[in-house]
Image (cartoon, rainbow, N blue to C red; front, side):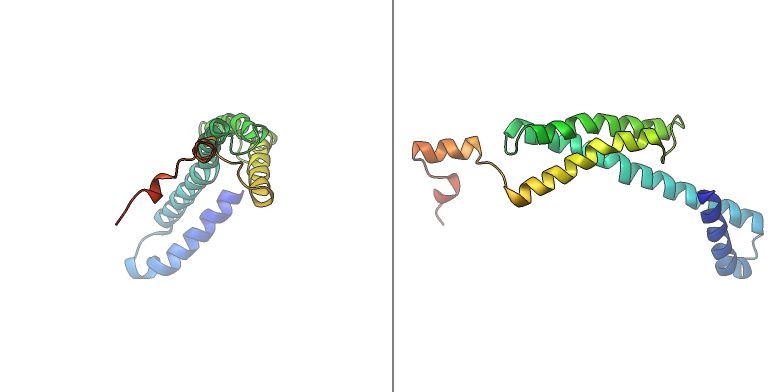
Amino acid sequence: MQMDRYALTAGIALRQDLGAAAGTDAASLVTTGASLVAIHNWTFLLGQTLMPGVNALLLGYLMYRSRLVPRVIPVLGLIGAPLLITATIATLFGLNEQVSVWSAIATLPVAVWELSLGVWLVVKGFKPSPITAGMVAAGTSPAYRDVTA
């Protein structure tokens, strides 16, 4: 129903802008409007649903390995990312609706991951890095101080 409304709006806009000048028929304008809506829906699905899953997978792995935040926070991202990616792929193949209970369940861990990481970094910040902590403990200076101009 939502797509029909967008297709109708796009078709009306195309008819008003191009119909009189180009002399095209209404059926081709509606088809063009429907194709624009389909491109919008696919772009939204890939950009706003798939990319946060990939982001959570990559950033969660880096945060888990570096131990800059408590391990529980990246684990939420590492659990939620495959769920979100799976739900997005199922939606791409028509096995699942974009707005459904299964999509909401798959989105919830990534939403909790993003919220908890943001709140943790605002309140506590990163833990000291083991790499820089070893440099300070050994008495060596960071590399950027050794460079002379």
